[in-house]
Length: 306
Image 1 (cartoon, rainbow, N blue to C red):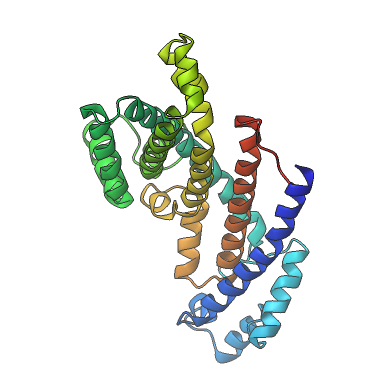
Image 2 (cartoon, helix red, strand yellow; image 1 turned 180 degrees about the horizontal axis):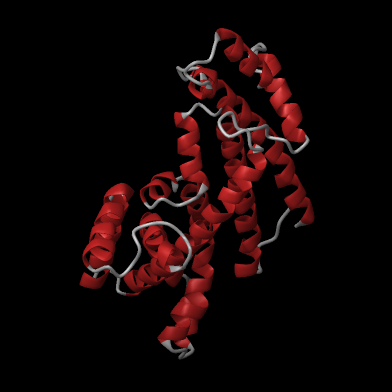
C-alpha cells in the first residue's frame, strides 16, 4: 500500500503541471486588463505601467509562467491584485469553510443515497423502487440555483425556520448543504441500487440465506458491505465535484467559501487568486480520490494494492 500511495502522489506532479499551464493560458486569453480594473480612475499611464511591473505582468508570458511555478514550489502563490493579501493565506481561510460545507453535504448525500439505494434494491420492480428512482432522476435534473431560491423562499422567507444566509451556527449550513447534496444523493442512490442488485444475485448471498440468516443481516452485513466499493468511487468523485461546484450556492447564501472568492476574482481579473484557487481545488480533489482508493481495503479486505 505504501508503494501504491507513493506512486499515486508522484502522478500528482504532471496533473498539477497540466492544470497550472491550462489555467495560466486560459486566464490570459480572457478579454480585459486586470491592471486597468484595479487602477484608480485618475491613474496615469505611468501609474499603470508601475503596477504592471510590480506584479510582473510586463514580462513575456513564458517568463510570467516560470516565475509563477518557481514561487509556487516555494509555497508562495503570489499576492492578490485587488487586496494585495497573500493568496495562499486567503485561499486557505476560504477553503476550510468550503471543506466543512462539502463534508456536511457529502455526509447527507451518502446517508440518503445509500439508504434509498438499498431500499430500492430490496424492493426491486415494485412501486417503492420506481418511486425512489423517479425522485432520484428528478433531483439530478433540478438546477441548484432554483432549489436554493425555493428553499430560501419556504424555510427562510415564509416559515422563518432557518437563516437565509451568512455563517455562525449549524443552522446557517443546513440549507446550503441540502442544495449541494441533492444531486450527489440521487447519483449515489442509483449506483447503490445497481451495485446491491449485482451482489444479491451472487452465490454467497444465496448460501447465507440458505443458512437461515435473517434478511436484515443478509442485506446490511453481507450484501451492502460487498456493494460499497463502486459506491465509494462515486462518493470520492462527488466530493471533488461538490468542492469545486459550490460557487453558485456560496454566492446565493452569502457564504465565505472559496467558490464565492473565485467568482469575485474572475470578475476582477485577479489572476493570482484564480490560479491559486484552481490549483488548491485540484490538489484536494486528487488527494480525496487517493483516500477513497485506500478506503477500498477497509471495506473489502480481499483487495490488495500493487
